[in-house]
Image 1 (cartoon, rainbow, N blue to C red):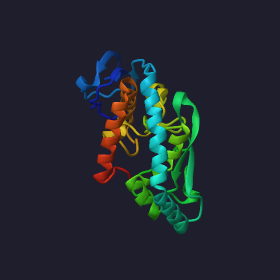
Image 2: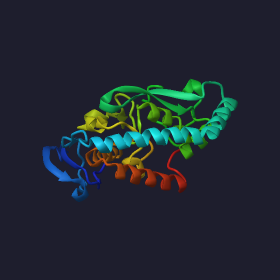
Image 3: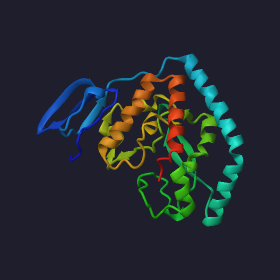
Image 4: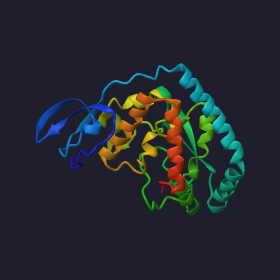
Length: 254
C-alpha cells in the first residue's frame, strides 16, 4: 500500500497489517492518540453492541417521523420544481432508485432525484461519482452540489428504512479503492446496528466524496462506529446542526 496512516478520531480500534514486511497485530488504541506513518493492510474495530437505549431510540424515531413529514410538506413546492426541471432536461424517470444496506444489513431501495443521464446511470454503485463526471446532467450538477438530490430520502425516513441521522447507506459489497469494505475493516458490520441516515457523523465532519483511498474509507467507518457507540438524541441534534452549517457554507457535494 502507498497510503500513509494519519487518522485522528476517538473510536477504539485494533490494527492488523504488515509493517516493513513483518506481520503485526497491535493492541486496541484510541485514534485520538494514534498517529503513524507506516503503511498497514487492514483494520479491526473492537466489538460494538446495539445501543440499549429504548427511550432514546423511541424519541429518535418520533423525531424522524415528524421531521420527514414536515420536510416533505414544507419542501413540496421545491420538490415539484426539481422534478419538472429533471424531466425538461433529459428523458427518463425523475427518481433514481438503488439497492442499499440498512439496519441489521437488511436491503432496502433508496430514492434520489436522478442527476445522471438515464443510459449512463450505474445502479450497482460500483463506479463512484467523481468531480466533473460526464454522466451528470446540468441540473444534476446543481442538485449534487447543493445535495438537493438527497431530498427524496425523506420518504425513506418516513417509512422507516432510514433515519435523519445515522451512517450513510452503502450499496451491497461496497468498495473502497477496489477493496471490499468488509475486507478492509474487520467489524465494518457494526455500522449497520443503527438505521442509515440522511447525514451522519462522518458527513458532519466533512468526510464526503469518492472513497478513492483506503484510509479515506477507514476514517468514515470509524466515524460511523463512533456514532453507534455514542448514540444519543442530543448527538443527533448536534450532527444535524453541523450539517446545516456545512450546507449554508456552500455544501460539500459535487
